[in-house]
Image 1 (spheres, rainbow, N blue to C red):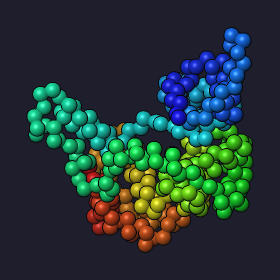
Image 2 (image 1 turned 60 degrees about the vertical axis):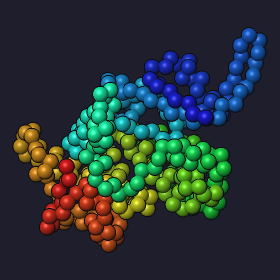
Image 3 (image 1 turned 180 degrees about the vertical axis):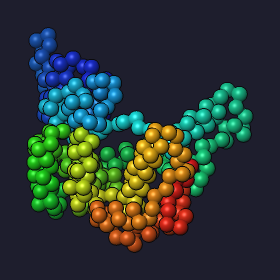
Image 4 (image 1 turned 30 degrees about the vertical axis):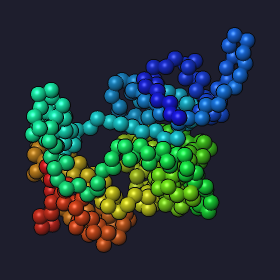
Length: 322
């Protein structure tokens, strides 16, 4: 099963402490009305908490932003920081989606109104979305029939990663790394294999699990420290994400940096996203500097439908498609 907890930061200390046993021993001890019993409590726990001051401050660590202790935080496999950041492209798409959804759901909507789709859906997508009903049965089948086994995984790589990350945790603060996180990485690797309906954990599953754990750790750091960690641990993430995903992430980072530079140059004035471009030389330099992939794989991404849907190439400059 799954346990969903909202407003986790507002739970009283006694209720929060009672989760320690459930999340580590997977049992709950009950002692009421003369009845003493230990009940099984094997389920996933997803908890949501708000920052102490209402907004997440990237200049502070995760522990400084939320009113939660290290013992309870260390019992979660991963920590995810969801921040509301201004992104002209994503904001435009979100507004378009909300307006189209409102038009379709209006009581007096005509057949033409109900057929309206956001601009993003009107374009040929690079991947076909999975039907919701099919996805539900897929998850049920995977959970009931697929139980991956950890065989010949790279134990040395896992041990080195845990050693390096734990040393970094003591040096820079952020999320506390404990032996529980080794189990977390193994569980994430098994989950990745189950996602592909495989009964055995492969090297790529371990790479994905390590990348997920590393992203969780980096998000718990201050902004300046996070930038350093991305470069320092890039060797662990290079193999995890597909080359096209890495190219997409790289271009989004470069465009965000260029947009910030343009705003500073105009002293906070409005900057049209259509004016912002990224030089191909900057992309190539970043790929070589971070040793992300072979340049042939980057050229393959530039010819893909995914690139053409989000960007356009004019000479040696890349622009966003709005």
